[in-house]
Amino acid sequence: MAAHDIGESFLPRARQIESPAPADKMLGRTITRVEVQTALANNEIVEAYEHDDRVRYVLLSTVAGRSLHVVIGEDDVFDVTVVPSAREPDSTHGWDPTTGYRTRRKGDRGQR
Image (tube, rainbow, N blue to C red):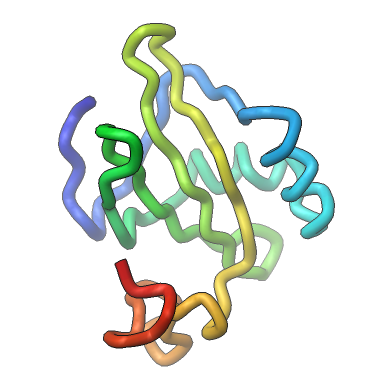
């Protein structure tokens, strides 16, 4: 996987939204696939972390006037960008609204 710096934009290769559970969660959050695809095309990387020996990124995007966090990872075997999760950021998951949800509050339960 190519290394990306926090704050730069991420442009995915082919896109694949994992299913069925993550896609069902996104629909339950009223986030559509089109909104996720829009977020993938226009975003800022706000966090990178290790998950199952791979790097995952949290992207921040504004779609239709609302903020979205889209978690992505790359699958080098199938040459696709995988989207396991998308949600509206909020302070209950440790994101700091005073930074536009770009950073987590230190010591909060969502801190990685």
